[in-house]
Length: 376
Ligand code: PLP
Image 1: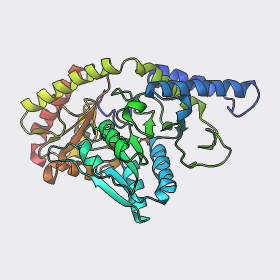
Image 2: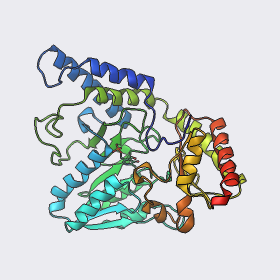
Image 3: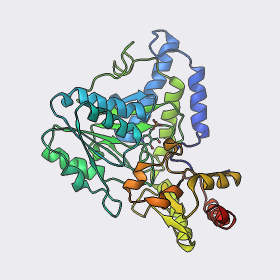
Image 4: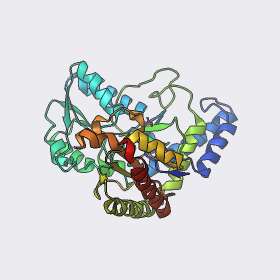
């Protein structure tokens, strides 16, 4: 199997599987006062420290959630109920993941003014374009660090620094799902108040994410009940998943630069082979995260290509996994429209991929061009 769909999800590493298993064996409830409970609590806190260290945050700034979608919902709706009571503008981008965009759209229906900053003709979103959309009435800016469909990096740190100077009361949220553990993301350097993270994109388990909340910022609890996660997110914690998340952070923290260099080399090879091949166009460039590349094979529909590749043991995605075959509006925002947008494929790497696999992908694409020509 050649797995090029790492932006959808990643394979859990052996160390993560061991940590999850250990979490299952430590079945105590972290809220119990007896020894089993205390042991579970100790392990939960060790994992929190691992996530915090990886993000350059304090352990008390990390709250475990079920996924990044929950983190972003909590962050965005939370701010709408605090600062949003007085200020009604939210600035975001037009290329956000649905977990952010849908929150903004829901708030728009409630009367919030949503400004969606669009990419320019080169596909970039400048820091200045985000800063200039903010005004005195802005409660929240929410922008992603790395786009999940084509790897475009948004200069969030620069934008947040500019906004902080002019509008210090505006709350700043970043969806770091496709950047965390891939780029050197640090909370303080990013300057965000709120950050959404997901474990399953970094070789951790599914069903666990985190929300970073800068110390001193208050947002209301999303789930109320027994008061877990210091009253912020009730519900008995999933120690296996939390331990798996911690293990993934421990495992990857020290190798961000190494993996970046390795994946950049794979991406450069992919770009070179695509440019040598007629009929393949690239929707990503060298300014994008090397982990995600969007391309289109002209005249061949994404779904057809996806299945053709799968029959050869190659797994890619048509657009983003969450669009489930639905045409992505985000790709259109990046200027890919008309027939070409029906042919978009997303190739997303992990450091486990190899140059031979990249070459095999290109050979398979060429074979598809030859053998599927009749259904164009
Ligand atoms: N944000 C981005 C940029 C993503 O790519 C994804 C998943 O594809 C999410 C958020 C949602 O993450 P989760 O599956 O943890 O809810």
